[in-house]
Length: 348
Picture 1 (cartoon, rainbow, N blue to C red):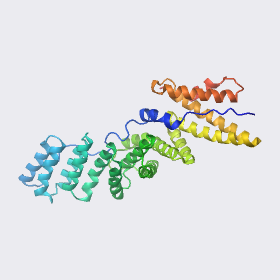
Picture 2 (picture 1 turned 90 degrees about the vertical axis):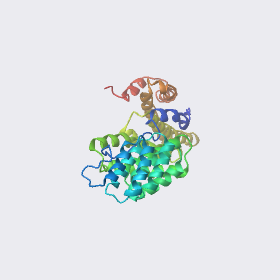
Picture 3 (picture 1 turned 180 degrees about the vertical axis):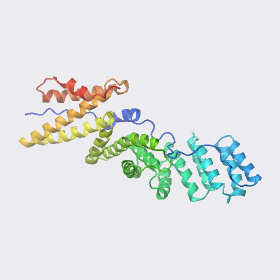
Picture 4 (picture 1 turned 180 degrees about the horizontal axis):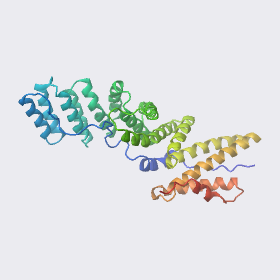
């Protein structure tokens, strides 16, 4: 039997647009602060403090914006650094800085905060904001430096672990990740997965929020690891992680496309060996691998069908699916539509 080798398009190039537009949204976006803390003022209720300290706290509470609150907090600390109210004030100001949208301002305020509230436990409260701002600003070396300090004290901070994992994933997708960022992403993803699969809920997070967070991010963390391994040419680990991701979310087009590419690469390799050696066992292996490729292509076709953003991907997938399916069915296409339909996402 003569094999007509079908070459798929470079999935690494094709996936850039679909991964970044339909994967999980922004690279690191939005503050992910897992603590379900009570929001509000730095309350002085039931605290025996001086009138002067109370006025200083009121000034923090009424200041407009995080920058003004930080300035007022600085003045407060000059006279009240040993007050029993300090932890409340520190927590309140940290929460306000977390809400800042401008990354440069968040970085500046976070650094100022750590110079004013210089206890290590206070740094634990603000460093996640600093790390996030560095990631959003693509200052990855700084983010890795701060995250190393933070995770040394808070090794189970699943939000920071997840952000680092996704930063490395997206930058790898863009072919812009350093080896240090990729390694940090893989290590962080593995730790975050361990915490999620072990149901290690953060103490201050509600069970409902934890369930939603875990269910949303588990497939994405496996997806991220798979993609990094794919681009660093470790196809065995790439397949392992991508298949786990597909097990959680069987309708993610970029995952299915990568899996079809891995299977097709394995098929091409075996087919070329068969053409050179003409051994029956290699023929059987090649046909089995082609069938596997057909299956992943059908899944990718089903997941991308009808989505205007994925029209180009769907067309290419269908061309390759038809070529392989026709080869395996003596030029006939009977049953291909039904195969795709089998993998369509059920309508609610």
